[in-house]
Length: 219
Image (cartoon, rainbow, N blue to C red; front, side):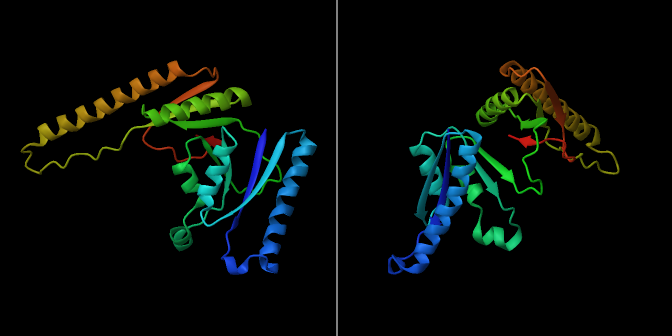
């Protein structure tokens, strides 16, 4: 089942019952009505909830908790610069504060949602990344897609060796040992992650950066 919620900005009491307040409520109901119709046409059990609050993120999380939701799906407007710094991001707050998984969907020019072919999950061995891996594994199996695991090795700057060479050998050895230790940790993280997933079509990456976008979902 799906719960669709719309949060109105809570107005001061002096505006209660005014045409402005009524217009905002009507606009929200029209928006939810569109989604209710889409759910009915798709044969999906769909409930709509409208609320008013100054704390949009808190209201979304409260609605999810009250309805025992397993996943929160939100669109992101992609604000940048001053607008992002001043207004913040409701999606970011929900992601930080929610106790359940949150999926953020970028605005797309496509009329329909593209079919998922690859899901990327970043792993580092932490409790949080293992939880993300669990969710990604389930999504990959349900959507029958490739699951890509990525562990990024921290970039270690090369040592500064003095021109005379004093201490240069010791610095180089320390640098080399550090890199080998990080690569060893990466192999352990990948082996542990490999043992925790059920998706058969899996690809493992160990890299310092992932610049090219070749994945459809990032968990």
